[in-house]
Each structure stands twice: as structure tokens, then as C-alpha cells.
Length: 352
Image 1 (cartoon, rainbow, N blue to C red):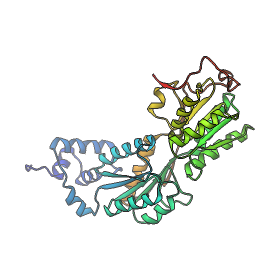
Image 2: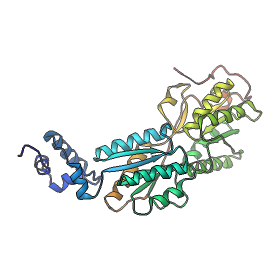
Image 3: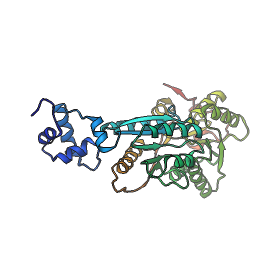
Image 4: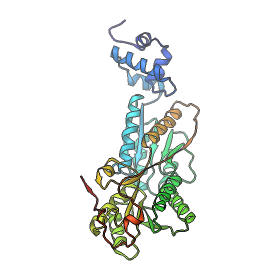
């Protein structure tokens, strides 16, 4: 064996073919897990270091993938990016992340920067009203996966939660607790995922013979706080609130503090998206949990299949959400039928 280990050395130690080593080091997801583990263990034992520059010249790949997201402060996007980054690193790829701030022109400029960096592919969560613009920019040849916000006419592989079913199941749960005056608080109906959640919510309410109260509360936490504070102080305060994403949920929590509303004594709260901070609040917040791990894995699979020019299986993935029942939702009898009343079992949301 030479002083500097080669791929042949890795193949011999791992007891696999040279082609298998090449596939593993290039991130091919089709390699069997046990073979992949042997190759990676052998490479680590030999301290094999790949010449990435030479590999890029041979393959015409830069081993980089761009990620375009609206806002890194959004907990869902931050967690998604972290999981994609881990999957990419395991496959020998580096990710380049840009944010759009929900601005379509900024999205165009920053996506173009990634293209100029010759990324091998792009994972895109489009900005508000930006799906068509990004598709025109990316063109048909660059490997791309659209995540979470899917345009009506989407030519690219896509991954998202089954928004209609998730919102339907969430509304059905609140209805099963005896609530009939339920408000769905959303950011913007111009977003595909929001429109789908509205459809699921309205379907459940219609089947129950109850009015579907949908409130547009804005794209930021502060917008949601102001809008929901006005709702809570008005005469039409619901007995249950279903927040359509984590930014709206955070705005709702600020609003219920501002208005002195007790959860769940005066208002049951169900969130769409589940994160650690919802579990840390007291009472802990019930949520429709999106399977971020599955969404990330499917996104990377679709990306890698395109980069490797492999046949794409299941181009459009829709994952189911799971209802996580905690203390912020309660039966209407327990919550008090008079929204203005007090109930000793309820309390303001707060950290332990």
C-alpha cells in the first residue's frame, strides 16, 4: 500500500468493488446500507482523503447544492436546512444557503448567484408570489426540488406535507372537543400550502355544519400579534384557534399574553408545525407535526437522483402529519362556554 491511500486500497479493505467505493464517495443513495457502512469505515480507517477538485473536473460536478429559503429565522425552515445539510455532508456535498425575505426580486438575484457558483442542483422553498419567476430562472436542465410551497403548475419534483389532510384532521380534532366557533389564522392565501390548509379546514367545518372562520393575519409574527389581539378583544372571539404555521403561532402566543387570555380555559390553541419550544411552554401546545425528517430525506433523494441522472421514483411526495395532543386544547365544557369567563384550570402560556 502506498503512503497515500487510494480508492483501490479502500475497496480492498472494505471487500467491495472499486465501483461501489466510487458510488459511496459520490453519495449514491442506491448503495446498500451495509456496503456503504463498510466503505465509510474503511475510508476512515485508512484516512482516505478524496481530491475533490480533481473529482469535480472529471465529473463536471462541484459537489455543491444550493438551498433557497424565505427566512432562516422560521423554525421549520431552519430545522429543514440543518437536516438537508447533514444528508448532503454524508453524501460528500456542501450546501450553499440563501434567503429571500419573501421578496421575489431578491430571490431571483440570490438564486442567480447560486447558479453562477455552478451548483449541481437547487432545493427551493419559493418566496411569496415567486414560484413562476424562479422556474423561469432555473430552466428545465438544472436539477431542482421544490419544497413546502408548490406552484399550481410545477414541472419540478416536489416534497410537502399533505396540507389538506393535516388541516382537516386538526379541525376534526377541535370539533370532537365540542368547539364550533373555530378560527383558522393564516398568513397569506396566495401561498399554495396555506390555500391547501384552508381547503382542509373548510371541508371539516362544512361536514360538521359549522361556519369556517378564516382570518388572514399577515406574514410576520408582529402582524399576527396585532391582528389576533384585535380578534381576542372583539365580540367574535372564538373558543378555539388553529394557527396555520409557526410564525402565526408565535404571534398568537404574544396576543394571548397581551389580552390576558387563559389557555385552554378561555381558548383552545392548536398549532400547525411542532417544535421544541411548543413542548416547553406551560401549558404545552398541541400541534399538527410535520415529518421534517421524512421531508428532508425525500428531498435529498429526489435531488440526488436528478444529479446522478437516475430514474426518478415518485416525483411528487406528500407526507402525512401527526396530531400531537397536549395541554393547550380542551373540551368546550372544560374551556367554559362563555369566552369572557374565567376557569381555574386555564393559565397564560409561559416557560417552565
